[in-house]
Each structure stands twice: as structure tokens, then as C-alpha cells.
Length: 320
Image 1 (tube, rainbow, N blue to C red):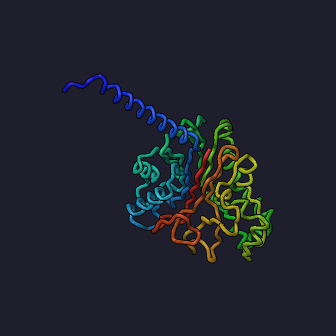
Image 2 (tube, helix red, strand yellow; image 1 turned 90 degrees about the horizontal axis):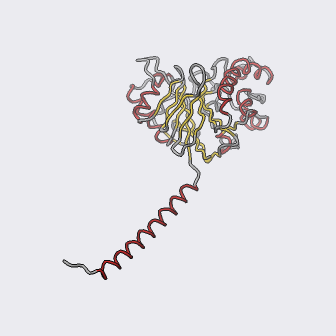
Image 3 (cartoon, rainbow, N blue to C red; image 1 turned 120 degrees about the vertical axis):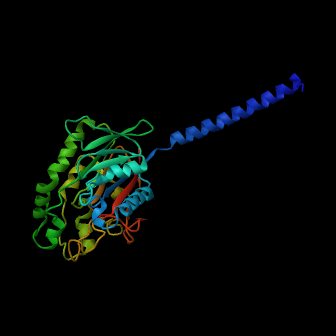
């Protein structure tokens, strides 16, 4: 069939116009997307001896650990108690990372990091407590995990009248854990220009949750005085902020307790507190949301049942 040139030219012109318009539309969409800040969802998750302490079948525990990460929509997870020491001594973090096809970095028997993004250990001597997350947009973020000393646990000692004033509680906490926090700060100091996120099981409450106002509103006769907990106070003085409290500033309304999801496990009556924390560079991030992940409870925002830990997890959404 013969097609004349007079027919071809209008078709070419129309095609060119459509392609031009489509190109403009796509470019506009790209610009809109580029102008929107990239979000990063960060999770801290204590696995309770890798999950074995939950006393569920191993495959069941792994399934619900994965369910927690997926429901949290996490991009990166900092683990504590990630080694299962009651069965095969395998790194549960590595198993979870392999199941998700994510990167994994093991710090030690307790701590590990998994992420959908590439992970590069910091350039430090020995094993690094922190890594560089290499995001898809080229941004690099320092991400560290802490698991601070669990004993003595000062809130219990206050309730049991072993510690009778704030000075004694702060001194005990300072001697027990402050060197661990300082060690992390020293390690990441050379990366001070980078956005930084520090997560972990602090085994110590937030100083923001034990102010005079917060303790008075809590009205627990076992907790008669405010305490300026030193681990979190040190981070705040070094330019970090508590991501959960950035969203939920009213301690009475949103206590955010992460210890413990198993009442009566260690003490009756139990002393609940928020000890699983996420701290972020104050001048590098905005917090867009913060949630508690755990068992059916009035404290839980993201529900997973059965819940495979004695700690509730925390997830926050950040933008640069």
C-alpha cells in the first residue's frame, strides 16, 4: 500500500507533539518526586536471645520476627540479643537478612544491623559499632547500635528502696553505662558532618521521661523522685534528639513503654519504662512518625501476634 507524503507529515507532527507533551509530563513528575524529601524508616528490635527465649518453634519465631519488620516497613533494623544461644548459636540477624535479601553487618554476639541499603563499616580500628548506610540517592548515614549494661537496673533499685535519691541513681547509671555511650560517640566523632542515627536497648530510661513533671504525673509510689538519666542526657548534650519524643512529647499520654511486654517476668509489680530508643542528629533529620511495635496492648501501635520478644520494638520515619 502506498502512503503519500501528505499523510506521513501530519502523523509525524502528531507523534512529535505527543512525545513532547509526554516528556514534559514525565519531567514534571520527576521534579515533583525529586522535591519531596526521602523518607527513611528506622527500627530498633531486641530479639530476646535470638528469639529462643519466646519458647515457640524456631521457624515460628523467625516468621513473626520477619512479620514485625515488614509491618513496621523498616528500611534498616538495629538488633540487640541477635544471637540465639539456646539452640544452634546462629546469628538470627543473618537469617533475617537472608530471608529479606538485605545486607547484614554483625557487630558482636548481641548487636547487628540489617538493611535494604548497602552497608559499609566505619573506617576504624577493630570491629566498628557503627556503619555507613549508603542510600539510593547517594546520601550516607552513620548508623550505630548500642546494647548498654543491663545490671544494675536502677528503676528496680529505686522501687526496692536500694537507691533513695536522684544523685544515687544517677551515679549508679553513670558508672554502669556512660563509658559505653561515650565509646560510641568517640568512634563516630570523625564522621561528625554525616547524619547520624544511634539506636539500641539502653537498659536505662530516657531522661525526658523522668522529669519532675513526668514523675508527678506518673504518680507511682514506687518511683518517688525525678532522675536525669545520664546516658540519654549525654546524647542530647552532643547534638542528638529522641526521635520518639519529637513526635510524642506528652509523656503521660504516650509513655511508649518498651520494657516489658511480659509482665511478671522479672518483678511483681513490674516497673515499666521506655528503654529501647532511637536518637538522631538534631540538625540533620526531621521525625515524621514514631510507633511502638508489639503484642496486643494499649501501648502498641503496630500489632504482631504472637509477639516474639520481651521488649517492644520501636520504629520511626525520618526525612532529611
